[in-house]
Image (cartoon, rainbow, N blue to C red; front, side):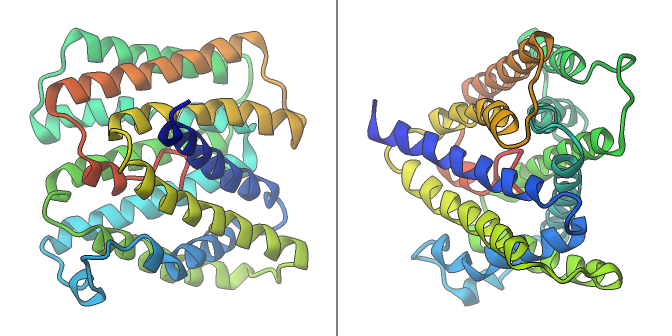
Length: 298
């Protein structure tokens, strides 16, 4: 196996490991508190993902403050929705809903970017929604706050991607990441205060682990996109669906049935088809790819 591809698989394994750590904390700590500590870890390790040619002073030079703020708001909403989903839903089910982000991005690109969507991309969107129906099985099980939170997180992530397409070429990566990390730490710090729970040693260790593996994955992502094309790396992100099943079974005793597995395959196929059409239409730059985390990553 190509070394770069192997590192890409490792990168997404680490992203999924961080998400599994968040799920472990479900019921032990409030959502806002989990997000505060994880995002604080990301913020403290931001220097490791800062490009060498960018200074901290450069990060303060925001060219599109309103759109940068909108993207940060979308990231905060996606983070809250993602943690709520991970801590209340079966792991694979949460991932299936979160990976609707490419389908939502396609839909939002029509009114906001004026893009023409052909039959292939429409087919991919329908395939993704069909897959989610097979995983979630509405009508056969009650929908919970976690389902709506995951769908909201996917929609917020798609909105963030649309905004990124407008500003990604002119705003620095450090600026975009710092805006998300600082605003998320500040807001979640305020929201967690009324119901703050002192973490146990175990809880704190999981919080640090979730934050660190996510930060390490971001660093690896930068390295891997130097050796293989960004579109290849993006395809590999769907390996997270496999890890969702594995972690769900091994750690949380969650076993998806055959119908749910078929649904997850539909969701993965939908995302890959959408990605291939995006690359065919306008390409996928390394810069743009590095500025947008995968759907499961907060």
